[in-house]
Length: 68
Image (cartoon, rainbow, N blue to C red):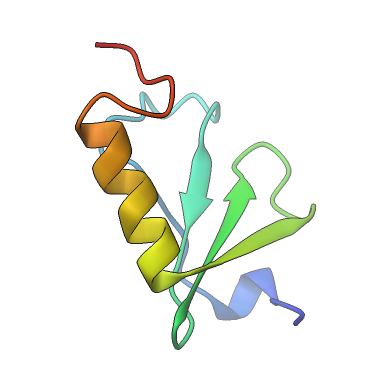
């Protein structure tokens, strides 16, 4: 599936310092496309909503190598 960057509203984490060193996400139907904020025209990884939610929950709970 191809995602045209100009047609989507991408957002970075509220914890991002705004220096372009983060990922950006958006939602399209039942998917969560994720891209590198430094290379907005680069590749996009696409996750299912449930998979992305489980990842975010794991990070919030200190899993997935997150700093505590």
